[in-house]
Length: 495
Image 1: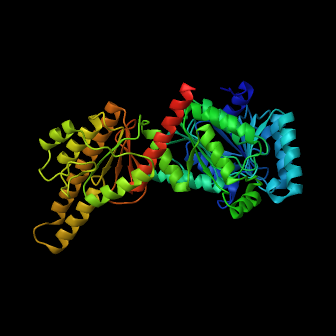
Image 2 (image 1 turned 90 degrees about the vertical axis):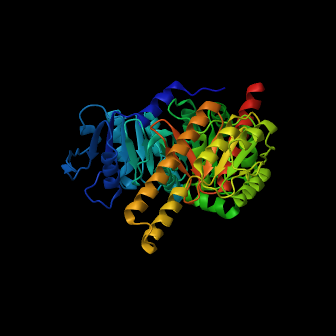
Image 3 (image 1 turned 60 degrees about the horizontal axis):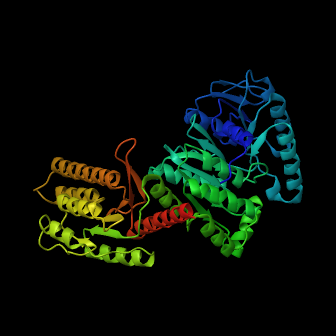
């Protein structure tokens, strides 16, 4: 297993754990990038010293402004450079003179524009290295890091702190993924928009995150790669340590052409990349939303030891759909063992299905549901569990209660409030039971919500979370990918 150069690791720490940041090109104009970055850093409550740099201003947002990076008192760990392309060389020289070890060059107009832009980019990157400075970018949306509350992107995204880190070869798509993460309760540790990768590239960052103790899951949005052999080595090294989930764009001729004009990336054959992913244990996502779904799963669920799935459902139709999805994804639904049937007969109503899926035939009784769930989870016959029909019931009950209060004298608004809150409390208790069973059995348990929406991480407490999906196919896919990675790790450890 390879290890990363210690000097490069130290340089990358300046990006993600800076004690001081200079915003070169800070602006008073709220519609300019120089304002976006400064506002987002302030709103994100950056823990270190923040220095706006602009030769024409004296104060921005209550902060003293410096004419040049060289005028800033004390050391600067990280520079965020957002000046016109012609001014970037001067900004780089100022940073080198100051001894700034790391810079994120937001400015575009380099290799993505053609040969002339590439020549300028190559010269700048060479000069930065000669001066002892490493660069992310150019042409990037920026970076995020939970360490020190670093919100250095052009988009107003502020996800919870967590253990998922993302490398993205598209800043726009990557920051949209951060917005999805924020909305769906997924905790983020680090985000890096790599831009043109003029200096630091995807493999450098993959190697870094593989060794990062604060990162448990790595997400990667890829359009292309220059050094395929090195990528294989970096990807396998990372996958042996933690899950790596990749969304590979440019799978078609049209997509590859778009990628080339976007960041200058080299696309490559879809079949070659898929073979590389299988070989290295990388988990492939099929869409942006699937990438976040899988991140929610891998960050918050244990790996299954096998592919035997137990299902409990409020209604038969969902059970049938789930069974089909499991069969198509290589998961098995074994029959219930006789001892479990006898145990359930003592606790469940006489009309329960006595099969897998366990069908409760539309009876919304959380005690019955929890009984069936515990039976499945505690049985050695099942490696993972899917529940369908409890989560989201609170919204249906709330709607029914509101309609009842509107059209019937039997229920008023106060009674509707009580009924809705009572059902919400019951749902929280159920999810708490799910969390306890996951911790007790070490098995992944996922729920499907009646209310639809998006996949979501529900927080039982700061350290305890459960994953809920809006559809059976998303739940099944998550378990299938967890099992796929579990098999890779098992085979790799035995080799």
